[in-house]
Length: 445
Length: 187
Image (cartoon, rainbow over all chains, first blue to last red; front, side, top):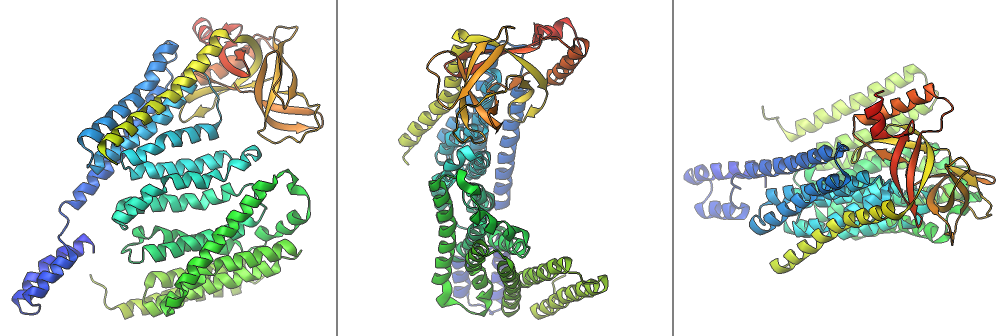
């Protein structure tokens, strides 16, 4: 329960007991059930945020100062200067480990500076000795040297930076010569997963698992495509419908009672991403190249194992999503219609891809995703109305509108018809919101 | 993790983190000390690297060579380029191969693009880092110098090469090291 609600409950209970509305023993049980009000939690959070921000700013400032390249100084003097930030950060981390090991603000702040200064030291030595270097190798060295900080100082900020770094690495390693190594991305992600599992186990709706989950979910959205760079063109359709459905279903299963949108990263990214991907797949261009690539010998430069691994990865994501859906099916009810349709995304992805790869015409795949996007919107709308969830209703209306508007721009309908359709969609939005708000009762001033 | 193990892990990680840049320094210092010097004719411009500051981007005349193999090439692939001194005193890339040469000086280069029997590549020393205010001036100085002396061949990079690794030792404009050029003839 949110702290402000707890404060309200604790303020109300004595009055309710006094007026005889709630018996004293029930009031005590309620207090025990919901626990005490967290004292100064806002102050602690502010301290933590400012500690991390301050550390990141100081670290970046020091990097920029040294990056100025004091080339009037001798090479030895500049080399010593390059090591000063890293040595100072290690010293600070050692001090925190000894004297402030339980302070989240100290641990996160020191860990952030430490992680930044590793990259700075390597960069500055490269600057002093005029080493060009390979960005992919630099990025990999940096994140692997920084990874132990996640566990030594139990830093969730550095874990998030690590996921961003791993995704940057796979982005740098997209050249054909690197393609056999692109799949290491998943191994790199796995190295920081024990930290996420640990903080999730301690407090699944706390700031630590929530922050890491947002960063990881966003990173996965770009990293999956980059790691598939060596696979067949169009396989991304299977991979992304599988991945986004899996993110959503995992969020529903493991964080079902998240009280705020901020605490639902997997569901939010999964549903929003799937809406965007489904909308993109209603167009012609994602499908039209797939058949010609399958038929031509254009892909001869791709090595066999890379091709197999890419396709296997895409298939695994789709299968995992379907397994997750199958496990939830026995508990399906009307308000769950939206997530059931989300879980069906990989089925449409595989069917659409298979048809586009084996037939010269791609209309089937295009129509399939038009129907799917419409179904997704309708499912969210119905589930929202049944479950009295305004957010779900608006998401459903948005998906339906996107589906209709996208086809309106494709077709040759007159401005008059398009104008009328927009007015109808807008009216539908307003009417549904008004009805639902009335059903929820009067809004507090 | 007990505190003793945590401290041990901390020390090991700190040593590894310090070791990586130290190893880089020792490798490069050895090349600068004992590597053979070559002069590469260059053309600078000035972009920035968010981590390493301003640098002068160098482009070289010696960025292509005949490709005699029938093997398929890939963008970014590593090849070995044999280097020798040309008759004009500047370095010449004699040939490029997929295998490491048994003798003579060579460089590791990355394939940029290719056509029939010619391969174009990136040399491993195409950046010269210097103070942020000096990089745009260096580029301007180079342009000015070329305008005044269109046929001059006195703008080049001195590179030391050893066992395939190279270190950019200095950049010369108007026959002088860049630092001296700034001191002697302000652009």
